[in-house]
Amino acid sequence: MLNSPFKLSGKIHSIYQIREREEQTLLDELLEIHFLDLTKLQKDNLTSLEKWLMFIKTDSKEERAMLAQGNPMMTKASKVMDIFYLDEQERKRYEAAWEYESDRLSMISESEQKGLERGKSLGSRQAKLETAKTMLTMHYPFEDICKISGLSPEEVRSISNL
Image 1 (cartoon, rainbow, N blue to C red):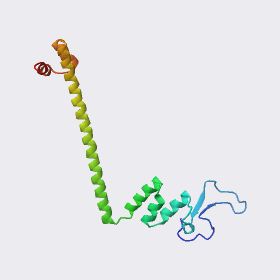
Image 2 (image 1 turned 45 degrees about the vertical axis):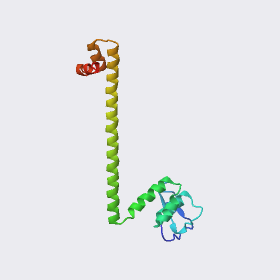
Image 3 (image 1 turned 180 degrees about the horizontal axis):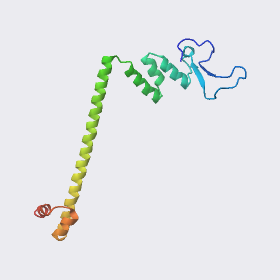
Image 4 (image 1 turned 120 degrees about the vertical axis):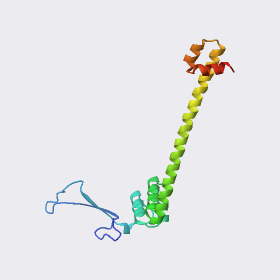
């Protein structure tokens, strides 16, 4: 990319290939040299490539934000650039805040997971108790109630005393 005029071409994007001088045979179809002349960019009716070139060229946070409108990848790149341009002290504060937020979200997720596990455990216990109560009212043998419900004999006795 050039921030000074490329005098060999009037185009923004020039592509050159390597050829043998006398026979003009192409050295390789894939080998190309691209020149992107940023000085020739106009600010209106930009192609996608030209928007990216303007985005790279500018130091203006506002201009980057304007160019990024409607382009999620450019929006993400703009946020990264904002961090890149922070001074050392601001970057340390940003990194500390990011680490704090990451830890906080991790703790919330872990807490939610423990809550779900506890809820499942309580729900499973409640189902066992309900099964045992139903079996008691239907006069099933005590040993069968323990086997089917998965409750201990003491737990089944405590239900039958209610």
